[in-house]
Length: 288
Picture 1 (cartoon, rainbow, N blue to C red):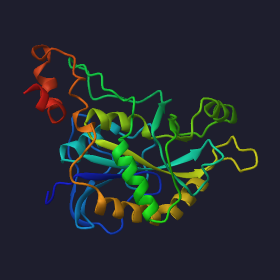
Picture 2: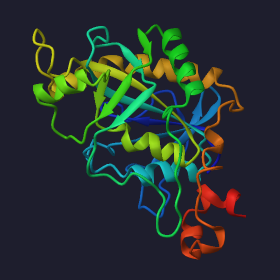
Picture 3: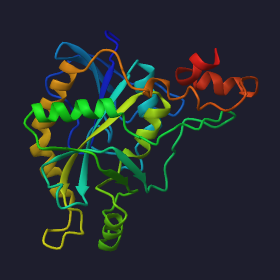
């Protein structure tokens, strides 16, 4: 690998590549959890080293449930990534979050049922804190970059992740609204939680594509609707990412980089050697 990227972009539905990247390398690292869902592109953007990973694979071949979230995050950690910005399509559960706008959420509700949620187990227990599931510093930087790129953006709101791949019923959608959820999507859980376990700053640039199915005066969400709005917003997302890469401070001022400091609860002499070896990129600085 020609350069160590400190920031990675995970592209969601409709964003499978980043224009403007001077590609230096294409890698597909093996991880204890399998291969990432797409090769990782490493290159230069705004004269900074960046990485790009297509969450759903090249050609969108993996459903939200089939995405190998652990391999994706572990692979990015293994190449030195410290910050991740996820590009995500979402439905709005609020009248004031309109299609075409961007939401950078500050809370997360996991409604998924069929996904591996942690790197830990097999003799090593960790209880990571996720009261604030997104990096507040990085999220503010994302908001500033979307504004600089000319986008309409909202900071804050609760993102509920459903299993998918189907969209919600009206009863489900109205229930989520009654719970106080703001936007709905299918991929941010467990991705955000795994990033925290990996001590990587994580933020979501969520592109509102529709009003889900609760809005009686709007057409119910369809896949065609989602991809059309994402296609329209692709240029905005790419301009915002360039600005973010140009202006992001080198040093992190948040606490994400120390997320495991008080989370590892297993006595060190009781951790199986194989588990220590497998999770070394995450825990070696704490276990010695």
